[in-house]
Each structure stands twice: as C-alpha cells, then as structure tokens.
Image (cartoon, rainbow, N blue to C red; front, side):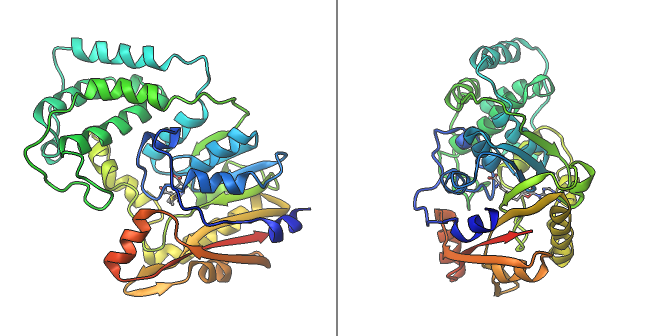
Length: 350
Ligand SMILES: C[S@@+](CC[C@H](N)C(=O)[O-])C[C@H]1O[C@@H](n2cnc3c(N)ncnc32)[C@H](O)[C@@H]1O
C-alpha cells in the first residue's frame, strides 16, 4: 500500500502561499513552508499512522497533520520555533486566550520598574513602543506557549509598524525614519485573538531536540511517514531577522543557538547523512519519507537538491518531482541573484 502511495502522491504547484489570518500567520518564521502546500500532501496520507517532521520549524506540517487527525511528532532545535510550534498544537478550545493576554497587559502597565531595551535593537522601534515591549517582556517566563508565540508575532509586527510597514522579508532591519508609534499592548491582544484556532489534541508532540539524534527520543520502527522541509544548504540563518531582535530583547544567547543548528555548509553533507540514518532507524518498513528541497546557490554554483539528497540517503527506492518555486520570496531571490531555481520533492520508501 505504501509503495503505491510513493508513486501516486501528487504535488501540484500552489500559487497562493500562507493565509496571514490563519494560525500560521502568527509569526513570519524564516523558511516557513506554505500551509496550503503542506495540507495538499497531508490530505493524501492515510489517517492511520504517525508522521514525523524532524525539522519542524514553526510547526506548519505538524499542525496540518494534527488538524487532519494524524498523530504528528515535530523535532526542532531553535527555541523560538519550538515555542511557536507548541503554541499551535497544544491549544485547546478551553483556553481563554484573550483574558490571558489582557491580564498580561494589565500587569505590564502596572509595573514601576522594567529593563531598558538593548541599544542595538532600540533603533528599530519608536521609544514609547520599545518601553511597552520591555514591560510585557518582564512576564515572558510566565507566559504559556501560545502567549510566547503571540509575543514573538507582536514584536515582529510592531517592528514593521514602527518602520512604517516598509520592511519586507529582504529589508528587515533597514532603518526607516521617523519611527511611527505603534501600540504594542493593542497589537498583543489583537494577535492573541486573531490567530486563536483551537484544535483537538491527539497526542501529537513537539520535541526541543537535535534531528541528528532522533533515536534518543523516538523508538525504532515507530514512524510511518516523514514529511519535512530541511534546513537549506545555502545555510539560511534561522536566528536572523525578527528572531535576532527577539533574542536580543529576551537576552538569549543567539550565537549559541545559531551554532547548535545545521548551518555550516562544510558539515552539511555529514549532518544530513546522520539525520537520514536516524530517520531510517525510527521508520517502520515501507514508511514513506518526503523531503521538500530545491536548487540552491552555493558559492556561485547552483546545486540540485533532489540529486544531492538522492546520493546521500540510505534508501534505495526514490522518486523526484520537480516544479516551479512557490512563494514570492523565492521569486525575489531569483530576481536579485539572476537565477531560475526549481523546487524538488524527493520521496523515498524504506
Ligand atoms: C526550512 S526550516 C523548516 C520550516 C518549517 N517547515 C515551518 O513551516 O516553519 C528548517 C528548520 O530546521 C531547523 N534545524 C536546523 N538544524 C536542526 C537540527 N540539528 N535539529 C532540529 N532542527 C534543526 C531550523 O531551526 C529550521 O527551523
């Protein structure tokens, strides 16, 4: 049955990307897969069985799988992404998120003392907005996963707002003056309400763990499907852009986090071989493994992701589907770099 799935599963090119009003619009995570794209693949998988996303990022695939009733396991090593992924899958209908958001704001407004925003990120905000962010940040450690994700999303949104909404995915951090005053408190409550999508919890789980060590957390022969978009081998920095601002505000060691991720191009092949061998160990026989990869420009040379992964995997049976890139940021990249890259989806069976 599973091998048939390998040959029959369809990957149509999707023109529209994420819906900003959905739960996935909560935070602009770098490298986020289109939820519509994820859904079209998940819809073709039988509901029985467990799905693993070893590089789950902000949890798009895990959330979409759980929404369909498939038990899903996400693994991720960037703590900001882990919070967002957990926010999506552990939220139940009983949680009164607006009340929680309002309580946090009430406490933030009442405090007398709070830390100054670090100088290197203060430049991105209107001074009054920065003070409001720091007041709310004081309660960060008390926040639920959902509220933490709302905090991240609100910081990103107000940073854009203070810069007159002129920041795009390629101009985040560009100094635009004068800074507009944005009401952080209002954005926080607004986002808590806007992205609230209760979901039936089905035992899905997010691990803050290294994909190179899957056998430490998952039993062997326990996974039926793997569906992921792995970190890119042109080494996109998942701790940059808005995440850099957030880690600085929260006084977290961004460089330590960055260095823990698969980022180093020289070690990329070895790291990915390790991950694929770990996937092999945790998958059941006949499991189906799907990697969404693509052409990448490394040191001026375009590398075909499908071919690259085919050569390093331990799996014998494979199929590669090539299609145009989805999403405007990829199109902007191609324009800037004068490239015409394609996306590949590689499907293996164990
Ligand atoms: C292309 S992104 C995945 C995005 C995700 N599909 C989403 O929709 O948000 C790749 C992810 O791999 C994570 N990553 C890098 N090295 C890792 C490792 N060793 N273990 C687990 N996750 C890792 C990065 O932090 C990043 O979030």
